[in-house]
Image 1 (cartoon, protein in one colour):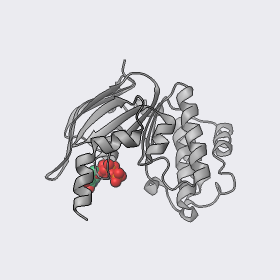
Image 2 (cartoon, helix red, strand yellow):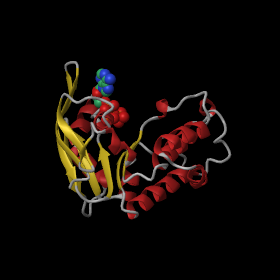
Image 3 (cartoon, protein in one colour):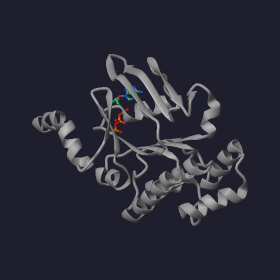
Image 4 (spheres, protein in one colour):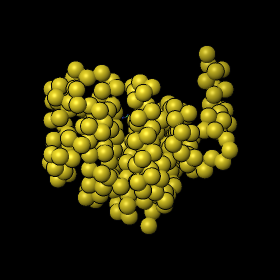
Length: 235
Ligand SMILES: Nc1ncnc2c1ncn2[C@@H]1O[C@H](COP(=O)(O)OP(=O)(O)OP(=O)(O)O)[C@@H](O)[C@H]1O
């Protein structure tokens, strides 16, 4: 059984075809990176995987089930950008709401608050949070239900260097724990720090590679060389 199975996903916004034919499978637990330049379709693909956006065609299976089966989202979490937070609710309100939906008890909520180091502001309204504080809360929400699969769209967004190190350790620990984590990030050195398994999104298709000796940054410049030349040519 594949943990993640994506077949022939296509998606256009109007005339713009963002995903032309995305097909890949992840069969082993571990940490996987999804990379590609701005606008290449990473968030679109992740949103389709989580059934938040409808694809034009193709199918997504998570843990052997269609992503149309809402039950699987008890075992699959998504870290999306901070627009999902309600500014007039506290971090604790968000965690309690999610805990009730997942059937997670109060002790576990407190454990996650401690683990993420958000005690000093968790009772403040999220509208008053900095970018990094919001990101810590989003990560807490993502791991609250101890999911088997975590899809994380730019988990390092807005984090200071110390926080990047602690989130890196957290992601590694989840991987060592047998979870499957798919992260998108533009910080290629961080990808090198957590995985050798990289999914490159280029021209609407995904190419899965296990990096051997090369660094993610080197492969990135090789794969996207044409786009880099185009970008620099336009300046
Ligand atoms: N709702 C939408 N309506 C129209 N176009 C959209 C919509 N959502 C995304 N797009 C377009 O789809 C393309 C892919 O966007 P997406 O956000 O998936 O890229 P990304 O790889 O996540 O980018 P980034 O690295 O900048 O976050 C972009 O050209 C974007 O403008």
